[in-house]
Image 1: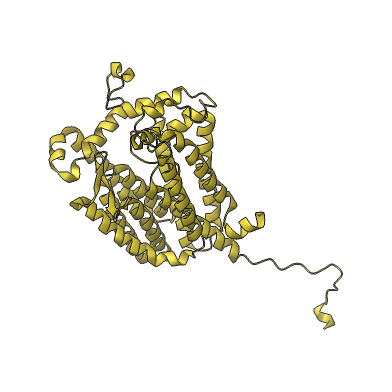
Image 2: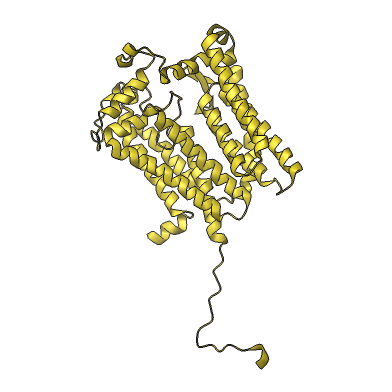
Length: 408
């Protein structure tokens, strides 16, 4: 059985274990966190069965993708990038499905998905390819491909930012990290940092001081929401309101209540109290339910799983002989880990509400499948690294005489 698994599941064994454990954790805690969905559907098992179906689909996707040579992904990245730009534009033209005051979903032939997830994957793959095309020490090559990376990133992230600021910001941060690790010169990267800070300041100023203008312009209508979340996080509410639960702070307060009543080992699986009161308990705030039922211990285990993934990704990068696979592993692992820590930070009160799911654990079919593809690509790189190794030539036996050149 062990040999059969090794033949089927190639690549880094540690990453396979991390992937499998995250899937198991997802099933265990989603069963409890989806109680409100079960009530609405009048079927207690419907939400978890749907979630398990997405996980099975994700496992199949990871398995198939990890068998595909990563060189095949290079041309497919640009096809996906072009398709995702078209889909994101269609969202802005009214072809999307609105939910939670944002239009992030599309429905085609009854299949509902998030174009931003496809865009994230495609952009990372394309940026990895462009980084690999930069010639060492060639300033002209660096300038050309840097402009290509920046242009494609601004277009994709800008379209995502309109309805999902946190996703666009995280994606751009991952691309920036890829350029930084890929040794793009700081004289090119520094203006990006300044422009990013200026953009955030303009968004906050518009949402804070011109909310009526934002409401009248469709592209700006989310700005006041983001500004309000930032104000609540930095202490914009009055002292008396800190102990009052209302419509504005319901998610944050219920999440903190769930965590405060957990202890070290939690209430036990299925014994969550706040799952029935916490909106998005099965998605944006599932980490609070994990801590409430599994305690601080479960919370630490989840953190360590993502940290192990990042650590193994770093080890894999050091073994890569070429730039492209190294960039893929860096970008995809950072995307998973950064999104995870943003989600967990929001749940424990270390950041404003963002709407980021916990990778592989939160409910969401598109997110689960695309994240599984991330794992599949990383595992595919490790598989090819292992298969590319040649066994060392064994030393001659001690009893074989050594012939000197003078004797020939």
